[in-house]
Image 1: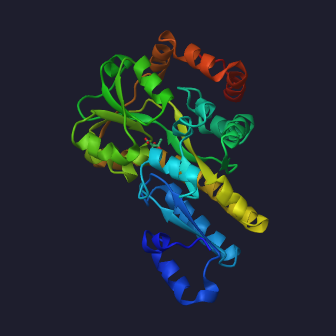
Image 2: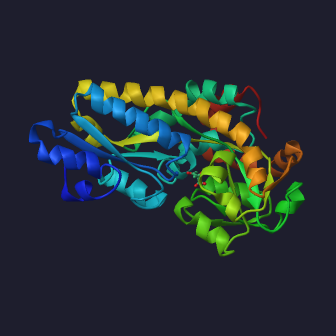
Image 3: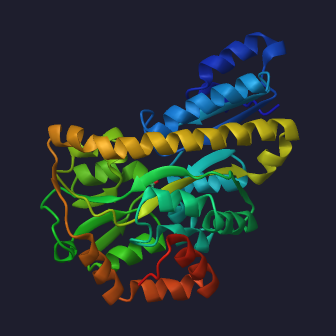
Length: 336
Ligand code: X2X
């Protein structure tokens, strides 16, 4: 019923759908799109392929989810609009980019909030994640329970190594579309430019910006090492991907199908977290072979710079005392 000509012609699902057209009895009852900004080799897409195959099988072929990686359906800002109007049924998005619609969803991305992954998963599977999902639901989107991993973010540059917060002064850095990212790099004294991930490789290769920040898994799978020379292991924030559904599309699915979808997506999210953590830990060697050089600066100096610039006080004010208290409880420390 949701099979449109466009869905049949584009993307990775075209072959499977082609088969379905010829055997009418086997045509999926629901054909949904899932969009994301990562390359097919990233653990998120690898695990998603697995999850969608299981969903197709366990629903007896009733729900086919076609995966569109690498921003094939549009950049993140465009895809968020598509998700809201139902043109795309599923989308994975950073809580910080989502904050352009759901302001307090950004709270999990505060600089240097999480000391390690153990604290991240306890928080995101616990009260902080529940708080974030409730905020998202208020805006009419449906988040799956388990958030997927992007990772701890590191700063790369084409023109100089970053050894201290001083080196970030005046640095022309790309940031994703999100007020929190703008604010963090403004607090460092950098010159941040908002660019969607779909345009980042080109922006780096043409020198529109000199640097960017992302987990190493992305520096590797999106081949940023081809256009960046240096990498500073700042771990300046943790980032994830909420797996989001359009509300009408979600509610159109019968309950038994919704259960199968949620079960498989949440299980694959947990698998993907392990894959991504491992990749972020091991890929440094591969990036070094590909010509990147690494620095391991004192992270606390960066945190102190944010604190002195009033970054934590500002964001505590914006998120509000209640939300901030949930964050501080989750990370077991007072921030700022
Ligand atoms: O845009 C980015 O840098 C990315 C890929 O990490 C996000 O989706 C936030």
